[in-house]
Image 1 (cartoon, rainbow, N blue to C red):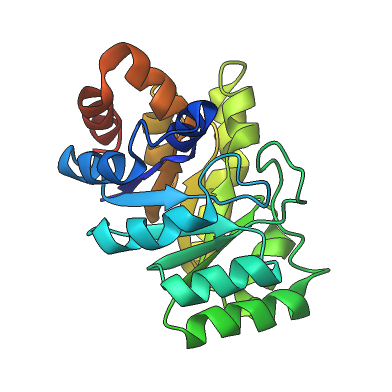
Image 2 (cartoon, rainbow, N blue to C red; image 1 turned 90 degrees about the vertical axis):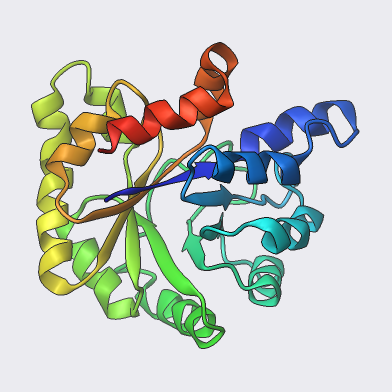
Length: 237
């Protein structure tokens, strides 16, 4: 079964807009798990416009499924992650001012840098995933960094899905074959939604986990959080 990890960054964004603890991020995380989510994802950015650094410890205390922290491995980020020891750390190549994650690592150019970061996290008992595009050479280079998993950046799939779903999924399906062959676990995320998730899942062999935030929270405005999580889980059956 493919696990659903709910990214709660957009909930934190709503909270931060009013300067109070409403909605309560810790309660939201608990509720997501109660409603069926199999993981909680956060991406604390340097400007802390979403999840803040001081949210991490309280969330770590209450998350009982899988706690996944995403981010660029700056010194501050690495210190926070190692101190709080999530189950998984997903490394993204975002520059500090990035609006959202919109490309994967060039694991060839940054192989040695990533190898050191991956080893440091693994030494702390944290599983590592690298955010990556479905490019063959970069997948093999990712394996050489020692990472446990990769997270396929699915933005291009989502953007092309309504034009040609077959073409949209081809490179991702081929990437999954490679990952399964060389022993890399497969996660995926970005712009996956109720329209395209089931199709993607059916064509990606060995898909372990999807991380979904923006689309899921938007859907929750119409369907409610509990119902929305159940709808996403249904797409992963």
